[in-house]
Amino acid sequence: MGKYTKRSPKFFENIREVDGIKERRCSNCQEWFPETTEYFYMINKKKPEKGFQAECKKCAVKRTMKYQKVNIEKTKIYRSKYNKSKKGKIRKIRCEKIRGENGKNLEWQRNNKDKMLEYRTKRQHKKHNINKIEWNNCKEYFNNSCAYCDLHHKEHLVKRNGKIINMDLHKEHVDHEGKNDLSNCVPSCQSCNSKKRKLSIEEWYNDENENYTQERYDRIQKWLQEDYKQYIVIDKKEKVYNK
Image (cartoon, rainbow, N blue to C red; front, side):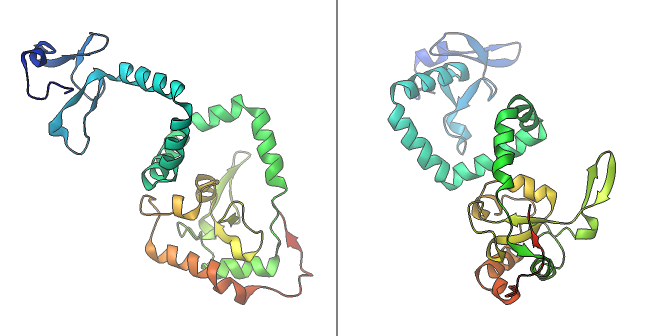
């Protein structure tokens, strides 16, 4: 409630009730808006009893943008720290999920075909140095199912050219910039493979993920850290799988 937390006469001048709807006047633009989260930010979300901020959302955003333009370096440092924090990582995952559900990702891809072409070209050079035997061993280790959501490969159905087909699981790079061998590969369904994108396993596969279980997480870590060594084929004359 700004500096008028003690409810001085000035406080009541900025609050009114119209047709049973409580309204608040923005301390900046002086416009009246319903006192709801649609028009005002709360002082503290965890303590709603503290009420709303004095200025409306539009004015708050304008003030923040103005500050960021003047304090570019401070803003960069703050964003970098926030993006690395647990809260920032969770927000990033949530935003990507929302963009995927409302079609924003698809719209961006259609409007940025040159960037998508560059991305696909880079992906073509990311080859899996894994032969057929190693790949089958990897799938069998995870019970021929997605390492993240446990979807069995026989139930891995996708739509291609208007037809529903049973497609093999993807060879998922757990570390996007990591190696291309068994030490950085787990089987993944198309859904999990698409949602994870460039995120690290810690950023994406945690208790915020609807498919997360501690048991599957531990199994993935056990495979990546030690068990994969048991399934490496020394003689790699078998066909190498590229993606």
